[in-house]
Image (cartoon, rainbow, N blue to C red):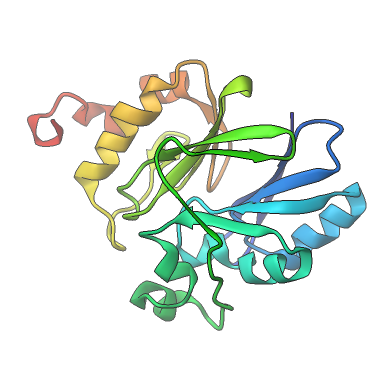
Length: 212
């Protein structure tokens, strides 16, 4: 499996170009800058067929519309976050800075399996940072793309339409069940589930009755 990590866009969100080695096609996760990603695709000789969005915040969908237009790739997102990407939500309007709206082609939900670039991406519904936040697990490779649900020793903020109880449930019940997985987050460096179980500061709340 090949993963090209591209921190880009207005707040340096991680965009990922993902494929099985040797595949001429790829999936792009959270395209934050279409121009940079298209340049990289041309350099690598790759065709993007799938655009997988972890959530609808502006910094993760910044390049989605242009990438879809230039490649014909289909856009996947949870239905609850689709209005943000399509420019129909107040957060998008306040923070977009002229961002081009992007309509979804496919609404994803828990347990969906997306075949792309020689790989299978399994959808995990992980609300909390946003109502429609999802993660994409490649189980064969023991890898998960977490968007802004989980970072290295941190989690996503919940003051922009999120919910802390939902976020903790997503962390403790969904992501912490992925023993042995490497985490590719929406910002900063990669990590592992084992590392987060040991060092993430949110672990202090794991047994708190408020989150049960």
